[in-house]
Length: 322
Ligand SMILES: [Ca+2]
Ligand SMILES: [Ca+2]
Image (cartoon, rainbow, N blue to C red):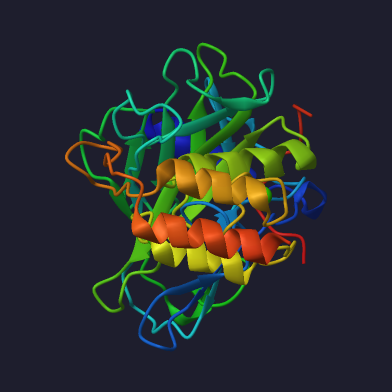
């Protein structure tokens, strides 16, 4: 979209009647009160690389945008305890794809509606994340590092821009040629010269998935970016992960050790841990498993386990529904 078209389009959507307003999905809650940009309010993604996922909500679809794009302004932001004038940026982060370790680091992740599985989206679609205030943008494809910045400033808020219902970013998906239906996800964190950076989180753009499919997609992307069996998320599979599994065995709510993604911490997850014991990331290469003999901790762990086990066209969404 050229600059004039963008201005006209933004002017047009700014004048939409209230009936064209829409819901929020799960806004990114940002609290700077501790000096760190603390993130909350998302879909709980306890098993996998990050803890929080956005934008899980049946309202949060991509819509037809200008030219050949799909777009959304969701997820928005709810800002608490942020000093006016603070510079806030979104930094997109690459991760290994542990479901296909022959691939380079991924920037843009895809879960297909047709296949109901992780995959590589055809035609290498572009996702553009753009500041509504003209601070810039980030452009990501699946495997190629951004040629410019991986970070975009999205807000330098005046007092009126702190609080709920902030939509400083637009997310565009190139739809030419037609982007396949599915979830297009990326990992990111918030950075600022005024605060300690946030923990990473996942944003997944919904291109015609049902709410149920969207949940599956977000969880699958998050799991694919995590070293299997690394239940405490420190990029190493070791005895501490076994203890995490043991402590939550049987749980359907504390799911950090649910390596099999079946909603229960169970024996399947121990099998994931055993199969990956000793691996670290980064290793000598991306995702390369450390070859280890049967470790003493594994033997102990096995004994411990034995004892232990006795829609597509929608109104433009650029505002908020209170
Ligand atoms: Ca670990
Ligand atoms: Ca499980």
